[in-house]
Length: 269
Ligand code: BTN
Image (tube, rainbow, N blue to C red; front, side, top):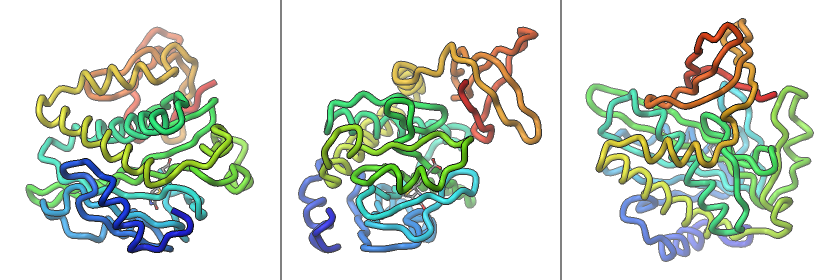
């Protein structure tokens, strides 16, 4: 993607995509403050379902919990608009869908097996290669989800790690783990195809089990000791399962069970 201009990227991507809805409308920018902000500002309208916004570089990339997201050229910075007709309670599953789709796409393009960290981080060798940010807009009956994907592809991890604190999960990149650069447009193609696959299955059968089972297969959190930062409180326990609502279940030392929701922050020991 690095040497191509915006309209060439758009044309090449449209030709590559075999999806029905994902990526049917494409916005590409050489530089943007944040693809997430741009996608958030687009109308909440059924016709925007599957629209993607890509920037070669972001100036003010946004991460979870109000953090910055370092987004130099060479990474894949993309936001996808989904207009779902399911209940807001199911929105957590879109994060799982995003993380699963990215892990599948990385495997398809590099044969590297990623691990998933609840709720939506993708790891290689215990370091974070991708994070997913979900913004939700609900107005009357219409819901709009913006799924932001920040994938450290063809960049040096030092560009990110230099800015992290000692509490943050270390970052890695595909280029460093694979030993080669990957074609970003092939990655986009694979990610969108996998999102469409998981999303359509989820919508057509309303069944969360496939997503939960796949997620469990790809996560090595189960059985691990973890700390949950819940407001000012720190709770330590063992992660043992995910329930049907997508919450992580942790057993505490007094054998009680804590349900961990999206808003809690989990650190593995
Ligand atoms: C996280 O904190 O783990 C989520 C990071 C999400 C970053 C992506 S990059 C594309 C999109 N645009 C943004 O400003 N943020 C998301």
